Amino acid sequence: MKKTLAVALVAIALVAACGGGGPSQPSGSTKVTMTEFKFDPSTISAPSGKVVFFLVNGGSVAHDLVIRDSSGNRKAGSELISAGDSSVFTVDSIAAGTYTIFCDQAGHESSGMKGTLTIT
Ligand SMILES: [Cu+2]
Image (cartoon, rainbow, N blue to C red; front, side, top):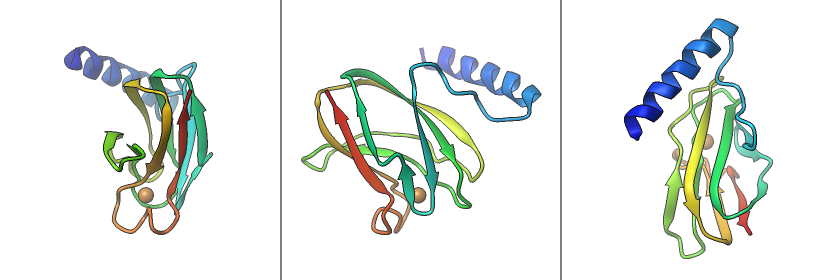
């Protein structure tokens, strides 16, 4: 499963490389742009189950997106995305509820890099 995904991602990356950009946005995904120090949009809603984010780092330092539940438990987190890069972040299963999204790079959340994810 993971290997298949890795191969698929490499294939996507190679195709995208020919086009001169990062991966293109998957249909049905939620695009989130990351800059210093915010997510745009910072308020996101999605139906429960599988959620796919298309993360675009439009800033000048690396960022990530981590999902924390209302009890403070980390539920999922993206890879670290370099400045100017983009990445598809898939959460296989998430229950209805209100979550916090934040960047876990040092100082970013406290600088305002956070938001709300509502799963219905
Ligand atoms: Cu950040």
